[in-house]
Length: 427
Image 1: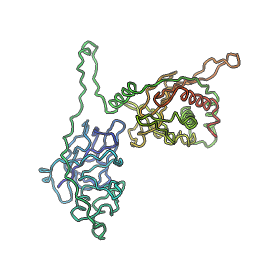
Image 2: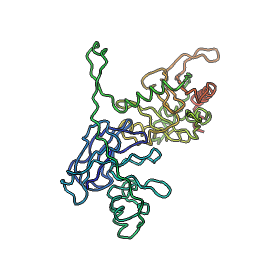
Image 3: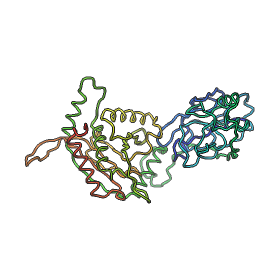
Image 4: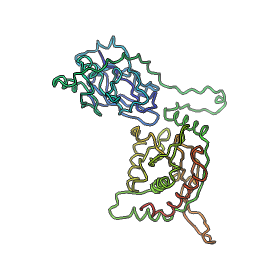
């Protein structure tokens, strides 16, 4: 019987996605680990690997189809010895969706009965054919090591176990899969409000999954998160001097940006004022033990915030390299879920566009976001005398449910001190 290839869940919250392209054509041979297709989610486009071998017998969901539900059948894979006639009566069945507590697996494609688990409750990942043969031969998948992509148990692992006589205790029978709903048709942009009929001619561009997610999350944040803003001007002439000195060192294999210094200073300020590195829940305020810094990156069609993990513990050159790598992957749509999901604080820098200052909307469930403006020469008064300094405006927005005014002010003071005396970032 042909194997159903299902729409995978690429993150814990994903319910649907766009099948962007197919890497294989009908009739082509598929090996475990081959890239079958690319799936576009609200954040990135990700490659999906095959977990079994066979012939791609039928593509059920064509490339470019939007709003494809997780666990919907997207293609049929012919097993060894099957021909195209086996497709005629193949039922389009899907495995039950994984429980919310299940660990997120690296994207793969395939279908099977409900995933088996070990005695400790951990999920076992095995190809559909491997599970089927294991059930027929009364093999315990928990006793069989997997050699497929990301440790998945595949057909040759089962054959090896049979030859060696290992894993002979049968697991409980799997439940019969439920029937999947058919894939939703591609979204069509429509504008029904009659007011638009009175406006000049326009083009209606359908909202992407990313744009819909941005709209929903920011609407919820602006409506549901009581917030306030603090603004401070910081002088960055010393920072610019240190940056030039470090970048001009012989043998330097890095190119530090002003934003790299801001990221490092913000991370250190959060470690010194940890009550700002928090998130609010109805039951408790979560105080994070490290700073995972989200950096807002503009991409085609929206915005994404890749994460520099444990930013306070990393040097400037390491931060700079990670920021550039993550920004490049973000623009190419190649971020993995763990590279943009989570984070404890966000920085949004629009200084490169000449923006003097701005207010950002908090990225929930985080407690704060820092908006960074352009550095520019401004008149300043020092010791009663008028002078010129390079000044940058920073605006902090915080969730008032978990961060009070005095706490936010203490963080801003710490951050200003670190930026204006940047040698402290090297200690």
